[in-house]
Length: 158
Image 1 (cartoon, rainbow, N blue to C red):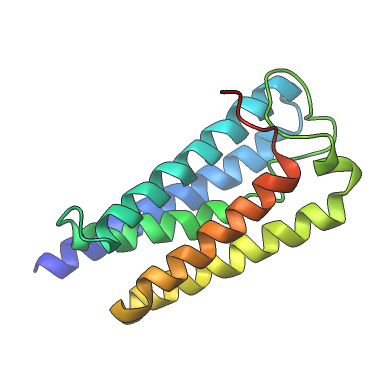
Image 2 (cartoon, rainbow, N blue to C red):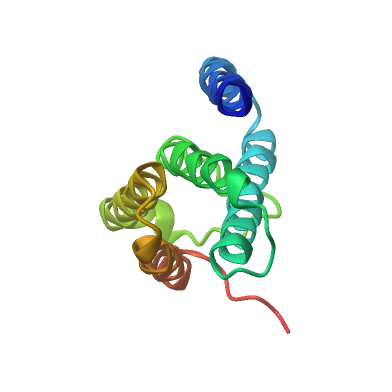
């Protein structure tokens, strides 16, 4: 019975993400660029939070193994949004995105695709229960994220 409940929660979460993505995609066109930036920042922050939670579980720092799939599925879903959350003319306001996101867009999209592939590989490993590869797949995804941030994100001020 527990797995049915977990599956039900995962289905609801996935449906919410898909529904939310559809609504945002529909509403994004008339939205001001600064609202797109806020949305993009929220998505990217959620990715960071899911990465941290997944890492804590995989590294054995917390005992929430039953929640790992939800985190990696959310990572997989949000990496699919990367292409759409950086539309032309959304390089305004308080954004950490460099102008190169748009001026070197093909290169940026290659980084996004790499992150999408790495997150899918992590989700596949978790779905298969391939515990010996969780750490490697998470590391691969982290490296894909870092590579994109290196080329397309403003450096953090210290």
